[in-house]
Each structure stands twice: as C-alpha cells, then as structure tokens.
Length: 163
Image (cartoon, rainbow, N blue to C red):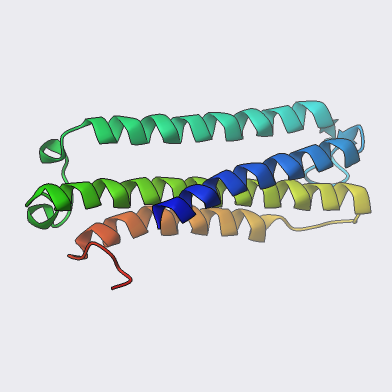
C-alpha cells in the first residue's frame, strides 16, 4: 500500500508540473484572481505558486523525517499502549504516519494544480465574474479532513483499516 501511496505522491508532483507548464504558456501576461480587477504579472504569480508548492513538499518531507527520528515512546499518540506494545506495532505506526504524509502531500499538490487550472480558465475565457469561494472551501475541507483523519486513524486498534 505504501508503494501505491508513494506513486500517488510522485504522480501528483508530475501532474502539478504539467499543469504549471501549460498554464505558464497559456496565461496572458497579466492575470487576475478576481477578474477584471487588480491584475498581476503572470510570472510573479506562477513562480510564487511554484515556490510555495516546492517549499510545502520539502517541509512535509523534513517533518516526516523529524517525526521518524523521535522514539515512539516520546510521542503522545492516541491508543499509545497498542502502538507501542512491540516492534511490529512501532513499525506499523511509522508506516501509517508515512502513508498519511504522502497522501496529504499528494492531495495538496493536486488541489493546487486544480486551482491553477481554474485561475487559467478564468483568465483565458475572460468570464465576467467567477466566485472562487467554493474552491477555497474545498481546500479547507481537504486540510481539515486530513488533519482529523490522522487522529481518528490512530484511535483504531488495527494495523490496517482494510482488514
């Protein structure tokens, strides 16, 4: 399962890169997030997004490595007696944590790629007004779901939720 999740994370980076390159070629020289007001340079916008995604991915990798370097006995986790009882439990704890980090990063990358596409769509199609609130709400929902899922997952006393 971790191999599939790692593939998903790498695929999401490739998808984000493809969308970024396509939108870089297809954006007008000035774009607007709230058409037609406050246009900004397409290069400034796209490179800020690229930097943000790159830094976010690096931070997630570093934070995962940091958590893996901390002994499990020092971590405060739900159902700690189950996750700390033997070596297999400890290994599965870190596998679940790693899978969660990769999945969260993959969904974040795909979400940002989707937002880039929608902003490109708004600017190329020159629509009068488009309410982006629903798309920001989707992002907030993804973040809240992912953060709550990891706490719920560690309350389940099973190595795999699919068993």
